[in-house]
Image 1: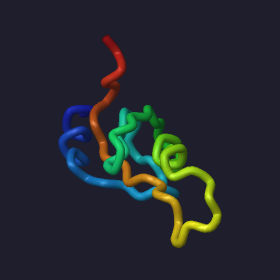
Image 2: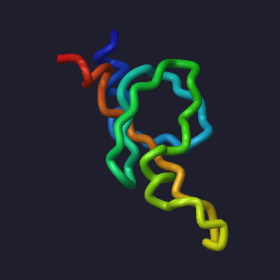
Image 3: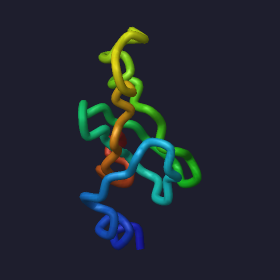
Length: 78
């Protein structure tokens, strides 16, 4: 069953602020930062992108917040 779920969302992207439906490891498409998320979590702003953009309020437009892509059920296990 897990393999079918993995296949069904492989390659899909998810926006910051949306709900996580499948637990696993996700990668921020703009920067490559990986984060493990559980079902029911909300896709967060990417910590790595936020650090890179700094906190300069004079910048126009929002700071990059991340577009998350599913990598696998638990890539961090060895």
